Length: 212
Image 1: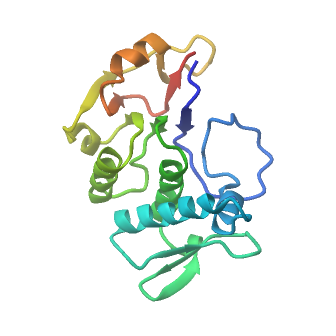
Image 2: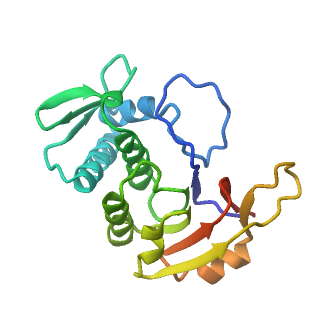
């Protein structure tokens, strides 16, 4: 079984108070504000959580290219505040790309030495930021990544990347028959020598599944 695995779906949104039940290995942005608040203000003895919060902020800074950017969770935990270029504003005042980066960077900082499955990380990121993100996860993290994408930017990346083209794999238990990549543990072990495996799929709704 895959003990150290997380899945980041293509629909990602930072929101609080959700009662939707999701698998504990799925990170889609729901209730992430409360998690960040705990890291920003750790209990005595859990100071390492503050270090994780600072790493998230540093990752966002590096990808955005603003060394002075600050991420803050106010006490009401209703939103995130971003201070950038002299403006301190709620997260929703910025582009959707910032939302995406906060979710992705949170995953990178919290989960280390994991197998990370990301669906369409290019969403709402312009091509240059996609390149920076891909280079960043390759150069600065110790995870193994399985990515589904429609982006040529990811296919053009040539550093220790395995690339697979998938048109459609029929899913027997879904009437809509979306596109799936399904792997068992033996197949994963065959690819583990690559830092990043990229799947290009033609269908509009793709999902990466690891079967244990």
